[in-house]
Length: 274
Image (tube, rainbow, N blue to C red):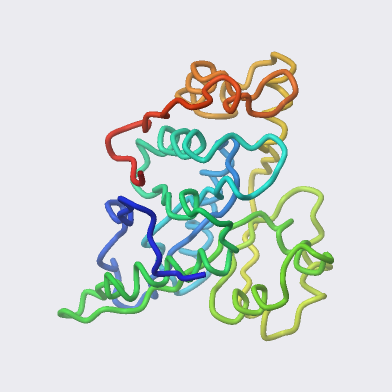
């Protein structure tokens, strides 16, 4: 798999990427959240805010970019709406955000892309093609650190058999950072105990001052039971789900039956990808 490979018509969404550091003493950091986002919730977006605040007060990093990277259709998971629908919902949810953007690269790749390759893609686009982030000292640029942003329960999966390939996990932990936001019911200390000290140095545990356990799975369950999801997910996303008949009575996407053979229009003119 090639990090430089691009789907037809793809352009990296750099419109919200901060090109210059506020302080030359800071290290540029790009946060990437990978997942299905079926559908996207307020918690998915809130993770970026929590991580950015924690980073500002506890590290030498400055967050210059925040990206959602929805998984492609080759990833098999119950309740997964098609990639175009999930991209549109993410676009609608982040339309008014000044910092969170949606990268369609992973979603539109014909084959499943492991997280390690997705992070390589961001490193390539930001550090190789763009050339990094301006430091504010003349024309000098600094390499942006690419970090995977996820719930702390992700760390628990590192030691779970068959979840991660050893090669991909080593690549991520050796070359990138991980910002793991704590979640209720997750014992992060036990999860970290399974990793070596070298890997621990690349993992930052971000504490949530206000616990939030909203999940896409719970949203789909609410929709299945015809219960309200207002104020749990953005209103434009609720309207989109209603308009396109997503998440039927069985709790899964009904798009393949209701819209089979029909083109799905992008949520806005700013959407990237084919």
